[in-house]
Image (tube, rainbow, N blue to C red; front, side, top):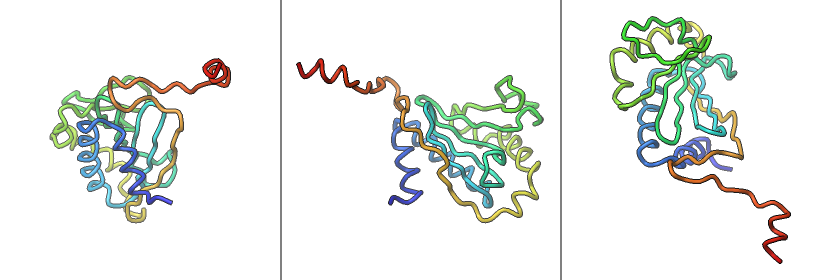
Length: 167
């Protein structure tokens, strides 16, 4: 059985070198901000993400880092409540707001750091009482869209197609 660390590395390696590098660097930054809690990993249909939570449940996720084939995005799960004087948050949903990390240095900007500070502060006590940060793979979906731009999805051959091909 593969270690959690090697599984996460394999998930990230599916992306182009540029997106993978951006994701790895941003993940290091976020893990430093969350010394306690749970890093919840999701390898979904159209993206790969790590959510940072004060509990092992999805409902405790405060922020998540998500890789798509062409970019990396930081999501704030209570983004609608965050002060955003620089107006860098995107989205119109009832809770979540996001920042596409393009350029990657945006994660280190004053505006994003302030948003992260405010997001974490709302759950300060929850994170203080959480165990040391640990990584948990929560979901791996078998049917996924390509992780690299320009790659076509693989079509599964049906029984009828196999039979017709064999004839």
